[in-house]
Amino acid sequence: MQENIQTLGIILRTEPIGEYDRRIVVLTKDYGKISAFAKGARRQTNRLMACTDLFCFGQFKFYPGRSSYTLTDANIQNYFKDFGDNFEAAMYGMYFLEVMEYHTRENNDEKEMLKLLYQSLRALLHEAYDNRLVRAVFELKTMALLGEYRGIVKDSYSEAAKYAVDYIYHQTIEKLFSFSLSESVLAELLEICEEEKRILWNHTFKSEEMLSVLAK
Image (cartoon, rainbow, N blue to C red):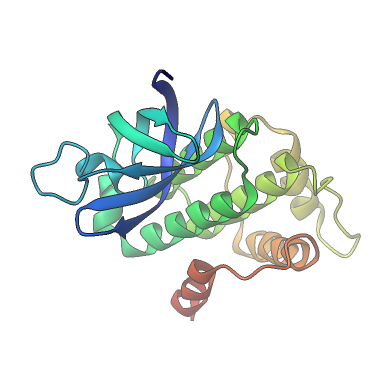
């Protein structure tokens, strides 16, 4: 008989299954991306209801079945409830979740990706940070962690923009969100991100389309 596994993680996606259950996708520290069933999680009195929402970060226990996992317990350390009062930040956060679900894999070492996601979500809720900058940092660092981007910038961009890219590429995740940019340099950084995404990702995220609407 297999034993439960326990790991740190954050919920990337949640969807209803049947009348009372949920299916969740969790980015974990030890097992990469996991899909699991949370039985009864849609019942008002079920203890799993509150810990199967988007953004929930904490310790999760799973029972590994033959073809899928079942969530048996969770100890949530951060619900990111402040997203409920900040629609724009929540939309950026949902975009980050979608990017991570697309790029991570089961049984992969995704520790750094999990760390980047958590720190990026926290930065979105920090008044000192521009959400556009947080997004740019998140995107470029994700590309770097995936081994897709080497931090090279065309000569047509300013030295400040080149320095920002170099900083993001080489800096540890813990110290990523410790700078600000002028509006003109931020515009360059956002342009660099768009260029690299077109080349490296070539994928349209649903939440990204909503962010485009918000930017208008």
